[in-house]
Image (cartoon, rainbow, N blue to C red; front, side):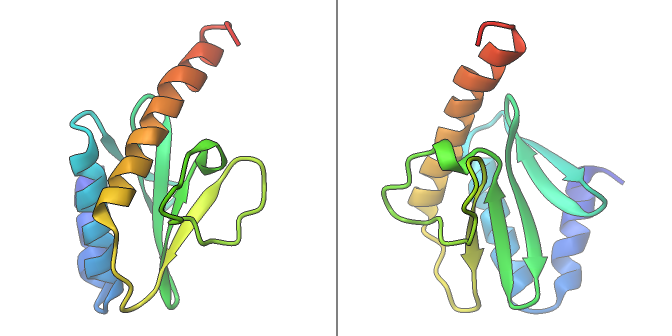
Length: 129
């Protein structure tokens, strides 16, 4: 089964509001850049990459969590990051039942993550930083 098929199976198997929420998050992420690659990581997590990991989405009891791999380094003028991440790297968005997903703000975060990956991760991988 491909990563996309696994993600689709996860979404359809949720059976509550988290399925449509994760489907909407996925749609927004994939629409943000045509080069985004869907992956299935860590034994059951949908993930999206472009020149490095962008974000991982997971349904939890009572919420859907979208964790940006380098979120601490991204601008978030609309204040989407509301998770309890306090480290130097990751930031997350917790989406609860009834929450509206701000598609333009999420698109901007995804595009900022791609820009971060391109300028920082590739530079470091090339031994230049």
